[in-house]
Amino acid sequence: MSIARILLLTAASLALCAQAQAAEPAAILDTYADIALAGYEDSLKTAQQLDAAIEALAADPTEGNLTAAREAWLAARVPYQQTEAFRFGNPIVDEWEGRVNAWPLDEGLIDYVDPSYGMESDTNQFYAVNIIANASVSAAGQTVDASEITPELIQSLQEIGGIEANVATGYHAIEFLLWGQDLNGTDAGAGARPATDFDTANCSNGNCDRRAAYLAAASDLLIADLEEMVANWQTDGAARAALTEESPEAGLSAILTGLGSLSYGELAGERMKLGLLLHDPEEEHDCFSDNTHNSHYYDVLGISNVYHGSYQRVDGSTVSGASLAEFVREKDAAVADEIEADLAATVEAATALKARAEAGEAYDQMIGEGNDEGNAVVQAVIDGLVKQTRSLERVIAALDLGGVTIEGSDSLDNPDAVFE
Image 1: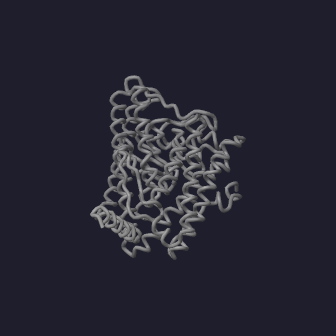
Image 2 (image 1 turned 135 degrees about the horizontal axis):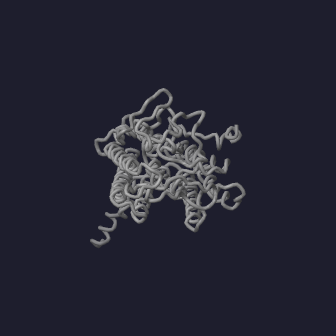
Image 3 (image 1 turned 90 degrees about the horizontal axis):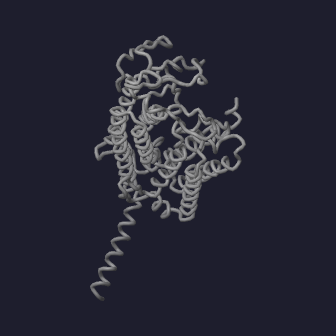
């Protein structure tokens, strides 16, 4: 036998051994944690680039610098949305997530709003207190000293009064400050805040110094929050340790809890079907920037990344390793074929939605009443997500895993309740 033939057989044998080892649950968890770390590192890196763009805007508030800051925000959403697949199954992530990606928000808490927004709410006494315009606010028996806008101040405002819609921090607070309200309903157009809202020498809408301070504080806090999550997924990080504190099988259950809950209750239900049922642009995820098509697409991609054990970083490199896909294929090839086909179909549907938006019809237009074609494009993604969730349930059964709870949504499970 030739040396080349021996080397070829040896390489094949090693590859088979590696593949066998790759399908071990412990190795799958390692890949999962490595992808989480890479995704949060990329989210931190792009948030730092956003912060630099915000600093440039504050120093020179031109329309060009505002556009650059908006583009940096859009770029920052790409890696972050892919990390949402690590929610639900990981309590450390889920408890933290509201600080960085909570929505929808009652934006009158933060800044000026259009008169159509109204000045009071039966459920939220902080609905229109406008922290940027006021050095002190009192509501619901609480007085807030806002004389200096700092990360600590806006952190204290997050969900103030126990109201989830009081979102003061994270990506969507920054989005609102960069774009302003989208007052177009289901017609074309995103928010149109002018750069002069940050220009102390030529100030529009008042309080330009405080508005720039709020934007800077929100950006600083976002970076600090992302640094915390990066640390949680390091080799000695708390999230990585929690993943394996019981058993590798429990870790697999955590992975599938996250994939199923994001796929079904969160994305198909709360983020998509609810807005489609109501034809309500206020229910779109990135409502100020009209970037919702990308947020949904990258959520869908993130689910596929985790299942296949592979993530493409923002620098073009790839983090990959032992995967759930390999493990399921070893256990039940028919189930593996089914889930892989369903994941691919959902990515395809989300790609079509993204392409439609990029061709000129924003997501809030797609969900508008009477737009049958746009509604159908959104519904196709919802249908794909629901179908892949049913296949994920068959994966759970094939692997004989316990402790998996997939979150539901009234918009899918009890649509009549949405209209009550």
